[in-house]
Image (cartoon, rainbow, N blue to C red; front, side, top):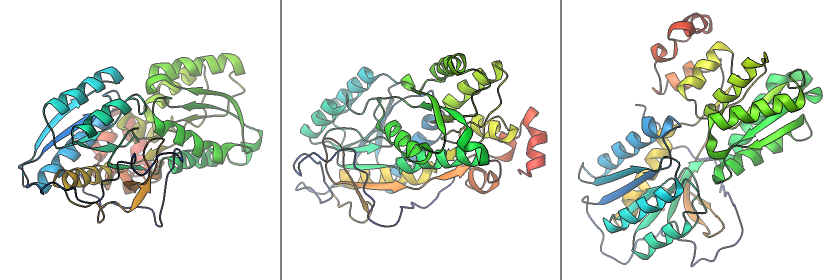
Length: 365
C-alpha cells in the first residue's frame, strides 16, 4: 500500500460549518494535558461508519491500524467496530469504547449531529476524540478530512468540462449525498458554486444513506419527470451512487457524463470503459496517517502543533486542530499517474475481462 506524505493546502485554511461555539466547547486539545504522558502501551478505539462503500474496510481501517502500530512500536491495542450505516449502533459502540477505557477514539460518524451526545460522554470520561473524514458534533479534539468544498468544485468543473460549449444549453440532474453527512453538504456547496448559472439543474436529490439503490430510484424518477432526451449530464457525489445512476441511465438508453468520488475500483473501471466521466481521487494514506498521528499524540498527552496546521469549526466546536488533504480529479487520462502510481490498484485489478481492450487503448499498465 502506498505511503504518501501528508499534503495540506497552503495558507491558513479554515472550513467553518458554523460560527458559534465557545473556546470552552471547542475541544481544542492541541496542548498536552495535565496528566502524565503515556508510553506506547495505549488503547485506541476506531469506529468507521459503514461497509457499503469499499474504501473503509479496504483502505481506511488497514492504513490507520498500520500507522498506529508503527508509531507505538507495535504496542498499541486497537479496538475496531463498523456501524454499518446505523447511527444508534454507533452510539452503542462509543459506549462500549468508554466502558473499555480506550485512551483515544478515532470516529467517522454515521450521523454527525446525532453522535454529539456520545462524543460528549467520551470527553466526560477523559477520552479524546479525533473526528475522521466527517466533522462530528461535540467536543472533538482533532479532525482530519479532505477539503470537501473543493471536492464539490472539482466535480462541478469536470462536469462542465465534459459538457463543453454545450453547457449553457444543457440540463443536468444533481444527486447529492446523505443529509446526515456534513461532508455531503460541503460537496453540494462546492458543486453549486461552480454549476449555478452555468448549466440548468433540472432535478436535485439528497440521497438517503448514500445508497446506490436510492440513487437508482431517484434517477429513474428524474428521467420520468424530465424526459430521456432532456438530460445532458449527472452530478453524482460518489462512485457508489454513480453505479446506480448509470444503471438507470442505461436502462433508458441514455449516455451522458456522470461524476463520482472515492476512486472505487468499479468507478475506475467505468471511467476506463467510458460509462463514467470522472471520480475524485482522495489519497487515503495521508488522511489515515494524520488520524493515527493525532490519536497517538493525544493518547500520550502530546501537542498537536507539529501535526495539525489548520483549524476547523463546527456548530459545537471552534478552532479544532485539523489536517486537510487535497484531492485530484481522476479521469481516463491520469489513471496511471494516480491510483496505479500510488499503489491503490494494479493495472491487472483494473483491466479485467471486458476492460482489457479499453485499458490497452488508454495505455494503462
